[in-house]
Length: 62
Image (tube, rainbow, N blue to C red):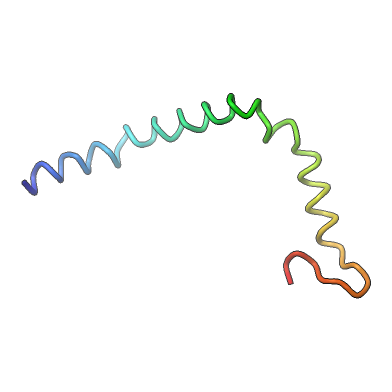
């Protein structure tokens, strides 16, 4: 039994897992219509805006 579990462990945490994770990333990118590329400017502007302290307010990192 431990040999079987060791074999399964080697398969899942080897190259099979890498290909599954890469495939899932490509699939989610395609299904969300490449949102991480389309809105990169908005994400960066939002992050820069949140780093500037507002008078009497807190930044998102405080």
